[in-house]
Each structure stands twice: as structure tokens, then as C-alpha cells.
Length: 243
Ligand SMILES: Nc1ncnc2c1ncn2[C@@H]1O[C@H](COP(=O)(O)OP(=O)(O)OP(=O)(O)O)[C@@H](O)[C@H]1O
Image (cartoon, rainbow, N blue to C red; front, top):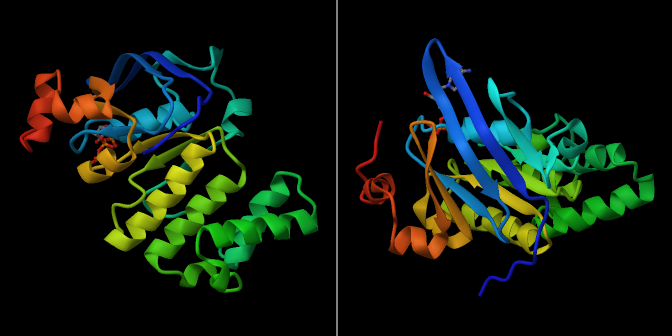
């Protein structure tokens, strides 16, 4: 049984549009993410999932539209309280430990507090034995775990993840999912893109299905998989929705 506390902030996107060379890449009329528990974004290749995620985190400014956090327009102050993890882990060319202490130093923690917190995070992520190793020498699954620990080190209000496990084996995927669920239980809002339907069922409280740059359906996870309302969702679940 997965219990999630009420979490903030409420994310609201209105009239998001991105176009290139006359083609509409993203066209989201209205999207609200305010439920407890992770939101999983599904959809075929090129559906606009990454663009949406990047817009919500402020990495891309849409041509039109408005994004608010708890009713306040998305700002650098919000972004400092958010983190994003990509399909390919982004790490510093330093030791595993230093990847964490670097982030914690920027959070203003003193030397002792940084070490303590970094050790705690490495234990949580099962990487304590690798603390002195170069981050460059980690396996793909370990590197992604470290990338997630770096993101969690700032205790983000929102953690955006773009296909973080798509290159990983089932056991590495399970380890990453454990970290994500633990963060969600601590109150971090999770917004995650995946192509793995099993993962969406395991982690998702809400599902957003993107298709052709638009939100085709948004539903609670149980409803989405047992009683999809849109033709796009039915086709997607039947494996027929491709670009
Ligand atoms: N900078 C850009 N310039 C032009 N087109 C872009 C740009 N970024 C994305 N696109 C296009 O926008 C569409 C949506 O891209 P996006 O990366 O959001 O898709 P996605 O749903 O994440 O796909 P995938 O599952 O393959 O990662 C695609 O057709 C892509 O080619």
C-alpha cells in the first residue's frame, strides 16, 4: 500500500505552446498537477513529453503560456527548490562523495554537516562503499543512482525525471524506483517521463498521456489502465499509438 502525504506546490500550466517552422510541438491548454503521489507522463516517441517536462522546470521558455507553482509564476526561486534528472546521468568529474558534498556546499552546509549528509545519502542509495571512487568509474545504474542522490540532496520540492531508467537493467531500475518512492513519501512532488508501462503502474498515482504535443488524457493510475477514456489512451495501451 502506497501512502503519500499532501504535497505542494501545485503546478498549473495554461496555454503552453511551442512551435518550430510552422509545426506545433507542444500545445497544452490546461494541466494541473496537484495530487499526492507521483505523476507519470507517458506517450509515444515525439509526443512532447520532454518538452513539457523542460517547460515545467523552466529549462525551456514556451512561445506562449503560463506556468505557476502554488499560484505564483515559475521563477528562479522556485527552480532553486526543484531538481531534474535526465536519461543520461549528469555528474561531476570528481569522486562519488564530492559529487554530493559539492551540491551540499552550495546549499550552505558547513564541512561536517556536508559529510554527514553525504554519507547518509550514499547509504540510502547503496553507494557508501564507492564513496572515494571516481564518479566516472561507476556503472550506468550506479551513476544514475548518484545523479538521483545529487538531486535529492537539496531536498527538492519537485523532482523532474526524464526516462531515468530507460538504459538500466531490472535490478538497477528497482533501486532507482525505491529512491524515487522514498522521496515521494517524504513529500517531494515527482513528475516523471517513462516509456515503461510497468513502471508507470508501479510508481504512478496519476498518469498524463501526451500525444502529438497535447495532453490526450490525465487520470488516476487505476482508471487509466482499467478504464481509459480517450481513444489515444486505448490505442496507446493496445500498442497501436505510434508516430
Ligand atoms: N529544439 C527543437 N527544435 C525543433 N524540434 C524540436 C526541438 N526539441 C524537440 N523538438 C521536436 O518536438 C517533438 C517533441 O519532442 P520531445 O523530445 O518532447 O518528445 P518526447 O515525447 O519526449 O519523445 P521521446 O519519447 O522520443 O523522447 C519532436 O518531434 C521533436 O523532434
